Image (cartoon, rainbow, N blue to C red; front, side, top):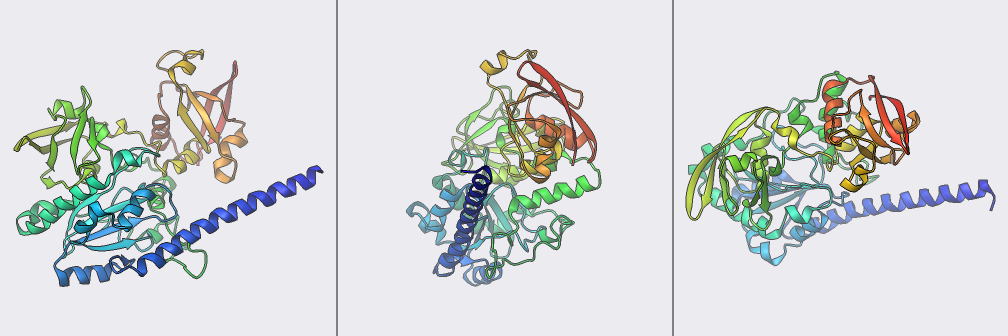
Length: 441
């Protein structure tokens, strides 16, 4: 086969493959609409109807925000949609509505972890936020974070809050979202003119959808275009409870499974088996509720906590030191791909295992990150264009070698460098040291 013919066949194969994937995503979105609109239980993409029904029936509202094309959390989402037996009777006590888009999302009312492709906000029938559900701590470990039993436990806690609403109303005020300077996602400068407030079911529906992660990316882009540093609360959003030293039991709403030694939580004398009842005076219905409190904490903070332990309420405090958020790992987040474009020109970096690191002529405690991937197209190809290659070992960034993780490199670039700044990246390639310059975006 001639080289030209071979190239043509390869291009056609790639194109057909891409079309097949796109069509599959399109079909998923259309089928979701068809299935849920025919449901006698779910309200599809109509929050106003859900609110009217809730007021009429005096029921709380369960709002599912779901990015249909995204694979993450799809198994859990399917179990919820199909109303598995373990949650069916509890779901019947809510007015349930499914929102499959971020287009038109009221950002001053609905705020959750925008790196999630599945999130729930519980509302009282008067519109007050009762709580949130849905958490992730990694790219491929959703089963470690969310379980139907934990979801059921969360719903039970919400139903109790709804029953005791008049007594709890004041304590729920802090769960309300903070006012957003941008009303809806399609008004962000980087999204404006590209999207409307509706999905285009008559055309390319997936391309017409604003994905949740695009909201976080757009928030950062506003700061980046103004050459402002990205603050910790935007760069390290929705801190997982591992940041304070807690591993939670996903089969419960908010029960502690383990406490890391010498952590913020251990210093607060939190123990395995404790249930987190309140933080900052807010009643908690899930891990996402605790993350909401942490998300709105300052650069340092003292947070009062109430625990349920052996039938008793115990009070303690979490002391968050300056820079506490930076203990978080953001490498799993979908929005980190855009940060890699800006900071590394499209490279994906990963830590080395101890055995591979020991083979390198790099002192212990100094930078050594493996280049797992180098972007090939568009703005994600800047590193490639500069000469960097897959399997290089990054040993210096911006004249420094004291960074330990990809997250630390990203934070340095987003908080100390500006767009268009040239950054030198030093690598090991085999036994040679080489230096390349990448202009930040």
